[in-house]
Image 1 (cartoon, one colour):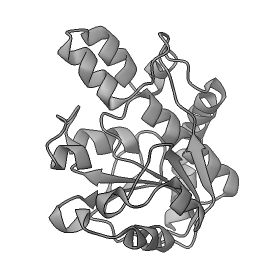
Image 2 (tube, rainbow, N blue to C red):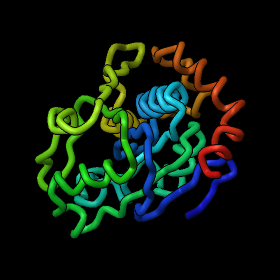
Image 3 (cartoon, rainbow, N blue to C red):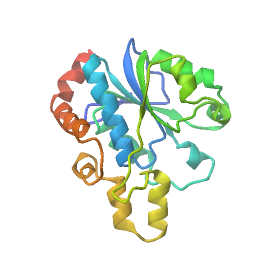
Length: 215
């Protein structure tokens, strides 16, 4: 286990066991503004419930493993940015040939090991071999919260695919704005302002909260 200066415990390869938690899951490719909003919402929910907030991600991201998309940042930077968003734990599963063959049931078991009392995902989230698991499957086992689409001022959905397209077109400023610079840049996109304000408040008390959870 590695502990970042922000206070988040980083678990490379998994192995974390908790009695209760709020978990958010995703590849988080680029940790763009929509990803930041998803993690923020999960952290706010965890603080309300008085349980640890866990971010569950993958290295490499599945699309990078399959060679269908180029990374927007390296895995170390991705984890650093996720840790800075206020989670107590960041679990980084190694996505390799063996992991991609795991059935959906194995992923459900991972979440049960985390004591997930609430799970936050995007609407298009899929898991397990050949993407057999989806949001409907998650709801059979956990209380699930699905983040509504986050859109840029032009009305397009903020996504890693959109950011890559902007970079290919040479529109670096637009891509940088959608990828964001954490909380400081998030106000430039039409995100949930209330949750971002809550996130800033949470960051001022995160250290003491984490000390209680890690004790």
